[in-house]
Amino acid sequence: MNVYAVPLDQEGLDVDSLEALLVEIQPKFVYTIPTFHNPASTTLSEMRREKLVSLAQEYDFLLIADEVYHFLSYTEEPPPPLAEYSDQAEQVVSINSFSKILAPGLRLGWIQAHPKMISRLVKCGLLDSGGGLNPFTSAIVQYLIESGDLAKNIRQLQDIFQQRQEAMSTALDRYLPGIHYNKPQGGYYFWVHMPERDTVQLRNIIHKNNIDIRPGSLFSSQKGLNDYLRLSISNHNPEQIETGIKILARSMQES
Ligand SMILES: Cc1ncc(COP(=O)(O)O)c(C=O)c1O
Image 1 (spheres, rainbow, N blue to C red):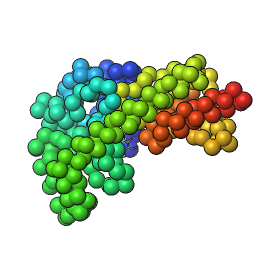
Image 2: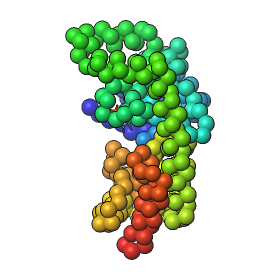
Image 3: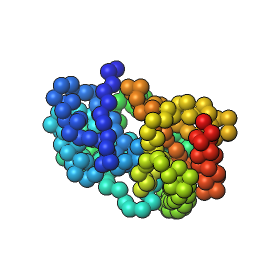
């Protein structure tokens, strides 16, 4: 597989760069995380969503939108999932998961797409032979959806994560005033730029103090992003987040 990277900016995927690439290559598919991107936390603007879908139609590629963070919005609602534009282009497929809104490890998700695309998928060999649909877990989750408990859980998660997000933002501003990040509107991640820092080296240093980060290079297909790091709010409460950032700042001063 030949993988081509397309740059992102504050408004998400740079659709003009993608268009320039499409003139040169004919991809089988374009994969993107339109909402609360992992790791950059960006959300694709409505204008760019329209353009991306029209590019899928014009250049006839499958557009796969990984929407796992769509429901984890803490301030304002994000634009609709890309599949809601599928009346314009049948080849738009939104994939989603219950991992982030119910429980990781369930191994259950869903696909939203144009009915013609769904019937193509349903006829594929794997599903046709009964494989991979996880029917027992699906029945349990169906019950949770119909009873309203899933919606209740999502509201609780939004409250919990909003508090963690505030805690992370306050701690970064207080203990690491020289760094750059955009406060995310949802999802799990803070994508932090530390100019002139090698974040792989930084990780080795902070491991001694029992904290961890994800160096930016893990998210680069071109061995770049060495001066970025990803922080997550998914697993720690506000006090732990503050303590972690305090230790990070102290470790940086000592190194
Ligand atoms: C963008 C994105 N897609 C998918 C997943 C994983 O979903 P699942 O647990 O359903 O495999 C993650 C988890 O980190 C993710 O960040």
